[in-house]
Image (cartoon, rainbow, N blue to C red; front, side, top):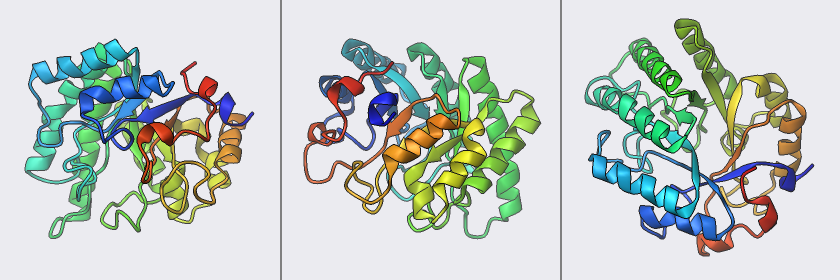
Length: 279
Protein backbone atom coordinates (compact mmCIF):
# COMPACT_ATOMS: atom_id res chain seq x y z
CA UNK A 1 0.00 0.00 0.00
CA UNK A 2 0.99 3.65 -0.03
CA UNK A 3 2.00 5.92 -2.90
CA UNK A 4 3.97 3.28 -4.85
CA UNK A 5 0.78 1.21 -5.11
CA UNK A 6 -1.16 3.95 -6.95
CA UNK A 7 -1.51 4.78 -10.66
CA UNK A 8 -0.61 8.45 -11.06
CA UNK A 9 -0.91 10.94 -13.90
CA UNK A 10 0.31 14.53 -14.14
CA UNK A 11 -2.00 17.44 -14.91
CA UNK A 12 -0.14 19.46 -17.56
CA UNK A 13 -2.38 22.50 -17.07
CA UNK A 14 -1.07 23.19 -13.55
CA UNK A 15 2.35 21.49 -13.65
CA UNK A 16 5.07 22.23 -16.23
CA UNK A 17 3.24 25.45 -17.16
CA UNK A 18 6.62 27.22 -17.32
CA UNK A 19 6.91 25.44 -20.68
CA UNK A 20 4.84 25.85 -23.88
CA UNK A 21 2.01 23.34 -24.10
CA UNK A 22 3.68 21.18 -26.75
CA UNK A 23 6.84 20.77 -24.63
CA UNK A 24 5.05 19.63 -21.49
CA UNK A 25 4.45 15.95 -22.44
CA UNK A 26 8.19 15.43 -22.99
CA UNK A 27 8.96 17.17 -19.68
CA UNK A 28 6.52 14.90 -17.85
CA UNK A 29 8.11 11.88 -19.52
CA UNK A 30 11.58 13.09 -18.49
CA UNK A 31 10.31 13.21 -14.89
CA UNK A 32 9.25 9.56 -15.19
CA UNK A 33 5.54 9.88 -15.94
CA UNK A 34 3.78 8.14 -18.81
CA UNK A 35 0.18 9.29 -18.13
CA UNK A 36 -1.00 12.91 -18.28
CA UNK A 37 -4.23 14.90 -18.14
CA UNK A 38 -5.23 18.37 -19.35
CA UNK A 39 -7.77 21.10 -18.87
CA UNK A 40 -9.09 22.23 -22.27
CA UNK A 41 -5.88 23.86 -23.59
CA UNK A 42 -7.50 26.38 -25.95
CA UNK A 43 -9.29 28.67 -23.52
CA UNK A 44 -10.21 31.16 -26.24
CA UNK A 45 -11.95 28.68 -28.53
CA UNK A 46 -13.96 25.47 -28.25
CA UNK A 47 -13.05 24.60 -31.86
CA UNK A 48 -9.31 25.02 -32.48
CA UNK A 49 -7.87 24.41 -35.96
CA UNK A 50 -7.27 20.74 -36.72
CA UNK A 51 -3.55 21.50 -37.10
CA UNK A 52 -3.37 22.49 -33.43
CA UNK A 53 -5.15 19.32 -32.35
CA UNK A 54 -2.79 17.28 -34.52
CA UNK A 55 0.25 19.05 -33.04
CA UNK A 56 -0.85 18.18 -29.50
CA UNK A 57 -1.45 14.56 -30.48
CA UNK A 58 2.04 14.43 -32.01
CA UNK A 59 3.61 15.92 -28.87
CA UNK A 60 1.88 13.30 -26.72
CA UNK A 61 2.86 10.48 -29.06
CA UNK A 62 6.46 11.63 -29.46
CA UNK A 63 6.89 11.81 -25.69
CA UNK A 64 5.40 8.36 -25.19
CA UNK A 65 2.73 9.81 -22.91
CA UNK A 66 -0.90 8.71 -22.72
CA UNK A 67 -3.60 11.35 -22.24
CA UNK A 68 -5.93 9.82 -19.65
CA UNK A 69 -8.15 12.81 -18.83
CA UNK A 70 -9.35 15.90 -20.73
CA UNK A 71 -11.71 18.73 -19.81
CA UNK A 72 -14.35 19.89 -22.21
CA UNK A 73 -14.23 23.62 -23.01
CA UNK A 74 -14.66 25.44 -19.70
CA UNK A 75 -14.31 29.14 -20.47
CA UNK A 76 -11.42 31.10 -18.95
CA UNK A 77 -9.76 28.40 -16.87
CA UNK A 78 -7.45 29.27 -15.24
CA UNK A 79 -9.25 32.53 -14.68
CA UNK A 80 -12.70 33.56 -13.49
CA UNK A 81 -14.72 30.80 -15.18
CA UNK A 82 -15.52 27.35 -13.83
CA UNK A 83 -17.09 25.80 -16.87
CA UNK A 84 -19.59 26.83 -19.53
CA UNK A 85 -22.31 24.21 -19.79
CA UNK A 86 -24.82 25.83 -17.38
CA UNK A 87 -24.17 29.41 -18.53
CA UNK A 88 -27.05 30.54 -20.79
CA UNK A 89 -26.33 32.06 -24.16
CA UNK A 90 -22.97 32.17 -25.90
CA UNK A 91 -21.04 30.08 -23.38
CA UNK A 92 -23.50 27.19 -23.51
CA UNK A 93 -23.34 27.37 -27.31
CA UNK A 94 -19.55 27.22 -27.15
CA UNK A 95 -19.71 24.18 -24.90
CA UNK A 96 -22.03 22.43 -27.37
CA UNK A 97 -19.71 23.30 -30.25
CA UNK A 98 -16.87 21.71 -28.30
CA UNK A 99 -18.54 18.41 -27.39
CA UNK A 100 -17.79 16.45 -30.55
CA UNK A 101 -14.40 18.15 -31.04
CA UNK A 102 -13.26 17.12 -27.57
CA UNK A 103 -14.71 13.62 -27.91
CA UNK A 104 -13.06 13.06 -31.29
CA UNK A 105 -9.70 14.30 -29.99
CA UNK A 106 -10.02 12.03 -26.95
CA UNK A 107 -10.71 9.10 -29.26
CA UNK A 108 -7.66 9.95 -31.39
CA UNK A 109 -5.31 9.70 -28.40
CA UNK A 110 -7.07 6.90 -26.48
CA UNK A 111 -8.33 9.16 -23.69
CA UNK A 112 -11.28 7.59 -21.87
CA UNK A 113 -12.27 10.29 -19.33
CA UNK A 114 -13.84 13.65 -20.22
CA UNK A 115 -14.49 16.20 -17.46
CA UNK A 116 -17.42 18.62 -17.82
CA UNK A 117 -17.13 21.54 -15.39
CA UNK A 118 -20.61 22.73 -14.46
CA UNK A 119 -20.15 26.51 -14.66
CA UNK A 120 -20.82 29.38 -12.25
CA UNK A 121 -24.13 30.81 -11.22
CA UNK A 122 -24.85 33.90 -13.30
CA UNK A 123 -26.33 37.06 -11.87
CA UNK A 124 -29.86 37.53 -13.16
CA UNK A 125 -30.24 33.93 -14.35
CA UNK A 126 -32.72 31.60 -12.64
CA UNK A 127 -30.75 28.74 -11.01
CA UNK A 128 -33.46 26.28 -12.09
CA UNK A 129 -33.05 27.42 -15.71
CA UNK A 130 -29.29 26.98 -15.39
CA UNK A 131 -29.71 23.49 -13.95
CA UNK A 132 -32.10 22.47 -16.73
CA UNK A 133 -29.62 23.74 -19.33
CA UNK A 134 -26.82 21.90 -17.53
CA UNK A 135 -28.70 18.62 -17.67
CA UNK A 136 -29.38 19.05 -21.40
CA UNK A 137 -25.72 19.71 -22.10
CA UNK A 138 -24.45 16.96 -19.81
CA UNK A 139 -26.71 14.46 -21.56
CA UNK A 140 -25.22 15.50 -24.91
CA UNK A 141 -21.71 15.22 -23.45
CA UNK A 142 -22.41 11.81 -21.90
CA UNK A 143 -23.65 10.48 -25.24
CA UNK A 144 -20.58 11.83 -27.04
CA UNK A 145 -18.30 10.31 -24.41
CA UNK A 146 -20.08 6.99 -24.73
CA UNK A 147 -19.64 7.11 -28.52
CA UNK A 148 -15.86 7.11 -28.06
CA UNK A 149 -15.78 4.66 -25.15
CA UNK A 150 -15.20 7.30 -22.48
CA UNK A 151 -16.75 8.24 -19.16
CA UNK A 152 -18.16 11.68 -18.34
CA UNK A 153 -16.82 13.24 -15.15
CA UNK A 154 -18.69 15.70 -12.91
CA UNK A 155 -16.49 17.55 -10.43
CA UNK A 156 -17.16 19.24 -7.10
CA UNK A 157 -14.99 22.33 -6.50
CA UNK A 158 -14.49 24.28 -3.28
CA UNK A 159 -16.58 27.21 -2.13
CA UNK A 160 -13.77 29.48 -0.82
CA UNK A 161 -12.04 29.55 -4.22
CA UNK A 162 -15.15 29.10 -6.41
CA UNK A 163 -17.95 30.92 -4.57
CA UNK A 164 -20.28 31.05 -7.59
CA UNK A 165 -19.93 27.35 -8.47
CA UNK A 166 -22.99 25.40 -7.27
CA UNK A 167 -21.38 21.97 -6.89
CA UNK A 168 -19.32 22.52 -3.75
CA UNK A 169 -19.89 19.22 -1.98
CA UNK A 170 -19.60 15.57 -2.91
CA UNK A 171 -23.38 14.99 -2.51
CA UNK A 172 -24.14 17.90 -4.86
CA UNK A 173 -21.94 16.45 -7.60
CA UNK A 174 -23.26 12.93 -7.03
CA UNK A 175 -26.82 14.22 -7.43
CA UNK A 176 -25.90 15.55 -10.89
CA UNK A 177 -24.14 12.29 -11.79
CA UNK A 178 -27.26 10.33 -10.87
CA UNK A 179 -29.50 12.72 -12.80
CA UNK A 180 -27.41 12.40 -15.97
CA UNK A 181 -27.31 8.61 -15.75
CA UNK A 182 -31.08 8.49 -15.23
CA UNK A 183 -31.60 10.71 -18.29
CA UNK A 184 -29.30 8.77 -20.63
CA UNK A 185 -29.54 5.21 -19.33
CA UNK A 186 -25.83 4.88 -20.22
CA UNK A 187 -24.37 4.80 -16.72
CA UNK A 188 -21.16 6.48 -17.88
CA UNK A 189 -21.42 9.64 -15.76
CA UNK A 190 -19.03 9.41 -12.81
CA UNK A 191 -17.82 11.54 -9.92
CA UNK A 192 -14.45 13.29 -10.10
CA UNK A 193 -13.32 13.07 -6.47
CA UNK A 194 -10.76 15.82 -5.79
CA UNK A 195 -9.45 15.43 -2.24
CA UNK A 196 -8.12 19.00 -2.14
CA UNK A 197 -11.44 20.61 -3.09
CA UNK A 198 -13.44 18.43 -0.72
CA UNK A 199 -11.05 19.14 2.15
CA UNK A 200 -11.38 22.88 1.49
CA UNK A 201 -15.14 22.39 1.91
CA UNK A 202 -14.57 20.75 5.29
CA UNK A 203 -16.01 17.39 4.24
CA UNK A 204 -15.24 14.13 6.04
CA UNK A 205 -12.97 12.65 3.38
CA UNK A 206 -13.01 9.10 4.73
CA UNK A 207 -16.81 9.18 4.78
CA UNK A 208 -16.97 10.55 1.23
CA UNK A 209 -14.69 7.73 0.08
CA UNK A 210 -16.85 5.08 1.75
CA UNK A 211 -20.06 6.56 0.37
CA UNK A 212 -19.00 7.32 -3.20
CA UNK A 213 -15.98 5.23 -4.24
CA UNK A 214 -18.25 3.07 -6.41
CA UNK A 215 -19.44 6.13 -8.35
CA UNK A 216 -15.97 7.66 -8.68
CA UNK A 217 -14.39 7.73 -12.14
CA UNK A 218 -11.25 9.74 -11.39
CA UNK A 219 -9.37 11.11 -8.38
CA UNK A 220 -7.24 14.24 -8.12
CA UNK A 221 -5.00 15.34 -5.27
CA UNK A 222 -3.17 18.34 -3.85
CA UNK A 223 -2.23 19.03 -0.24
CA UNK A 224 -4.07 21.51 1.95
CA UNK A 225 -3.41 24.26 2.86
CA UNK A 226 -1.67 25.70 -0.17
CA UNK A 227 -2.63 23.30 -2.99
CA UNK A 228 0.97 22.12 -3.10
CA UNK A 229 2.61 18.72 -3.45
CA UNK A 230 1.84 15.95 -0.97
CA UNK A 231 3.72 16.65 2.23
CA UNK A 232 3.53 20.44 1.96
CA UNK A 233 0.26 20.60 3.91
CA UNK A 234 -1.53 18.49 6.49
CA UNK A 235 -3.80 16.17 4.47
CA UNK A 236 -3.11 12.45 5.06
CA UNK A 237 -3.13 11.82 1.32
CA UNK A 238 -1.30 8.48 1.38
CA UNK A 239 -3.79 7.07 3.88
CA UNK A 240 -6.77 8.47 1.98
CA UNK A 241 -5.59 6.91 -1.29
CA UNK A 242 -5.21 3.58 0.51
CA UNK A 243 -8.80 3.98 1.75
CA UNK A 244 -9.94 4.57 -1.82
CA UNK A 245 -8.18 1.41 -2.96
CA UNK A 246 -9.71 -0.55 -0.07
CA UNK A 247 -13.13 0.80 -1.10
CA UNK A 248 -12.67 -0.63 -4.60
CA UNK A 249 -11.32 2.32 -6.58
CA UNK A 250 -8.85 1.07 -9.20
CA UNK A 251 -8.50 4.17 -11.38
CA UNK A 252 -5.81 6.77 -11.69
CA UNK A 253 -4.88 9.61 -9.36
CA UNK A 254 -4.28 12.94 -11.07
CA UNK A 255 -1.56 15.19 -9.64
CA UNK A 256 -3.24 18.58 -9.81
CA UNK A 257 -1.09 20.66 -7.50
CA UNK A 258 1.04 23.80 -7.73
CA UNK A 259 4.80 23.23 -7.82
CA UNK A 260 5.53 26.26 -5.68
CA UNK A 261 8.59 28.39 -6.38
CA UNK A 262 10.61 25.57 -7.93
CA UNK A 263 10.55 24.11 -11.43
CA UNK A 264 7.81 21.52 -11.90
CA UNK A 265 10.38 18.76 -12.48
CA UNK A 266 11.53 19.19 -8.86
CA UNK A 267 8.03 18.95 -7.38
CA UNK A 268 7.84 15.14 -7.32
CA UNK A 269 10.43 14.26 -4.69
CA UNK A 270 7.68 12.76 -2.51
CA UNK A 271 7.09 10.03 -5.12
CA UNK A 272 9.74 7.39 -5.94
CA UNK A 273 10.62 7.51 -9.63
CA UNK A 274 9.77 3.84 -10.10
CA UNK A 275 6.19 4.63 -8.99
CA UNK A 276 5.59 7.36 -11.56
CA UNK A 277 5.02 5.38 -14.76
CA UNK A 278 1.47 4.28 -15.45
CA UNK A 279 0.70 0.61 -14.92
